[in-house]
Image 1 (cartoon, rainbow, N blue to C red):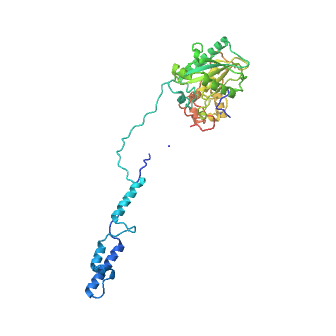
Image 2 (cartoon, helix red, strand yellow):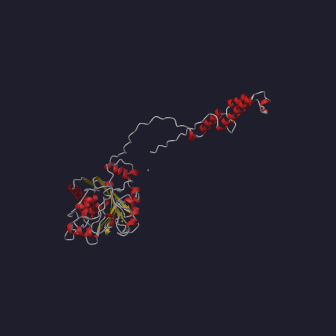
Length: 389
């Protein structure tokens, strides 16, 4: 069965620093020296009576002592000619002009507040843009309620009759019943809504001019993704059935190898709608319920166990282990021991290995020996371009 994952698949508190500029008022060393020289000259003249008062001072009728005392009384001026008080005021004014130099006023501390919890949504009420952010894809996990919408493909070669649609619906119902029973075995509840006879709004017909085969899966997928977005009201479906788990079954009325294209985490919002393409026969016999169950399980995170897959941690050695210990595992084979497909019954086993990948079991013994992927969230697929957790 072709599987898409086989593409082989930022408190800082911006505290503003306040710089305090302190103006030191007083005489400078130079002015102290001048004052002392003046006093010494005056004293020497008075004692000895020799010498004259400097002309500049005598002409003003002021003795040298007075002149020196007067000079000492005059405030010392800085180089710019301003008095100290004027200089201090100018400095303060200059600080106020610079935003970064202002003191930050004291602010009352804001009490600690608990962060608001993340918004939760009831099943089916989540906005579509939020729903499409799920790394699990449209189908989600196989637990609770899920809706599987049937899309009957009509190409250049085939069409569907009412009888054929009814027969197909019966096989899908058998597969859904089997999966519900298996979930119960692992303590889970899984309800799959698949009956197109009772639920007319989960049945659609898609017509295309292309010739659909098991090798045109990429081209068909592009067309189907667009068809689902434009033609199916998924908000209505989710609200009606109260679920966010929706998968799509593409029924193709011709022989071919059935396959599933599940959503991969790395795709983000691309190819969000998960689709299983089911051919009416494999070329030898009609497709049975086990094949439907097998492909449906792919949409919910179960990988193939019959061939190696590095993104899933499935090695060749592990495949041999499955063959020996779980030869009837549904992800290993969909045939009976006699090589037959049962139309409306499933005799295959859903082992703990598949239950692990579905998220029905947290741990299994096989993890100790084999590098099985521990995908986060469980039930998701990785395409190999990133490393799963």
